[in-house]
Amino acid sequence: MISPPEARTRIGLAALATYAIVLLMPVLINPLPPLTDYPNHLARMWFLSGGPGTETVKAFYRVQFDTFTNVAMDVIAVTLGRIGGYELAGRTAIAASVLLPALGGALL
Image 1 (cartoon, helix red, strand yellow):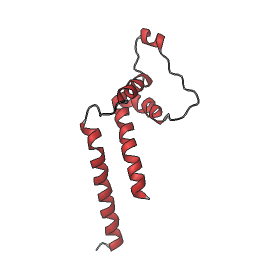
Image 2 (cartoon, one colour):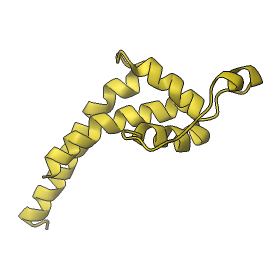
Image 3 (cartoon, helix red, strand yellow):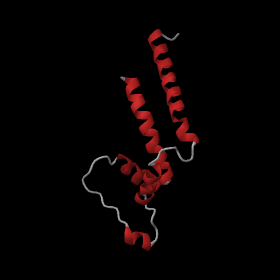
Image 4 (tube, one colour):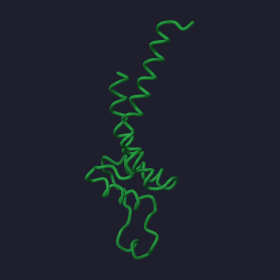
């Protein structure tokens, strides 16, 4: 028999999982999320993940990482972009930006 604290923990985890799925549905359903600056971020992720294959593009643009802030999306783009493509990297970044603050508040 399950004790009441264990039952509450299971119910809480099930509620959290349901909440996470509901939050991620717009990201999973829409091919291009309705975010005004997302196409610019997606283009940057394409570039960072090795997108420019021609010498013409490489002549005009180069990746230069200096010391600056707010580079989490770029780190995701470099690592995931080479594995699964820039679109996967973009969806992962959006999912993390939607899900992590909500889960952080719920777990407090």
